[in-house]
Length: 348
Image (cartoon, rainbow, N blue to C red):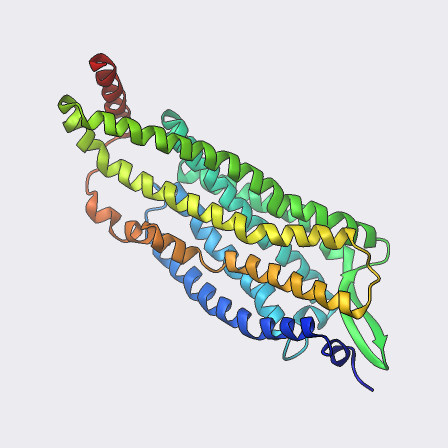
């Protein structure tokens, strides 16, 4: 008697799906493991008491690593032996909960750091509120929120067993009484939490940041034309260069997030709306599309280290303390900024 797996292998889409699961996960795991570990140790060397952005990125590296091993490693391992979440009822509940919890926290850390950067860029006089203490408080709040949001998986799912051609299939899925919530309602909730709402917030805030950067660049070009302001301008360059690189890094991270996670949200919504009873050909096509979107999602959790490096942020983390032995106070920086604007206005 052939197994259900052997039946699906008759379809080309399912064969491609199996190849994807054999090749892509180990590559992403290697890249993501080394990248997130390097990010963690490089960033933690910074004085996080004075760099609130790095607090978010340190926790982001940990969450991304957990996402890869709770989700992607489990998925890949399941191709060669039993799926971890199918070993016991307790693991079924725990894996589901951790998968959603870590993914949500990871995404909203990007949102939080984008909000912080927006405040720093658009409202520099309020920048003192964006400190390590505030960032740690935001991190704790995010973790508490998503612990409460996703804790229902600890009782709404369990390990269920089905028979197919005299073979037993185990699957971690919604319990009777929670099927509508988990299979119909939750894909929408998860799409909003994990993708659509962060997508909207990040798009709006990044648009504001980019517009401000363009305006600031134009002002800097005007400042260079006034020799009276050259000394003040040079004093501002060291601090503004670091801030500019951090801003560019966060813009890149957030845009990569948008590109890599939106397909998964669309697939989840489509799955919840589509007919659940289909033939094997349609089923294998859906499985293939889902796997492609899923690999893109895990790609987002694997490559942040390379985005840091590409935007120069890793270099900042290594050399920042040596290049800036003495930092001007926030008050002095504000006065320099205001003096520059006033001088420019008087020349006009």
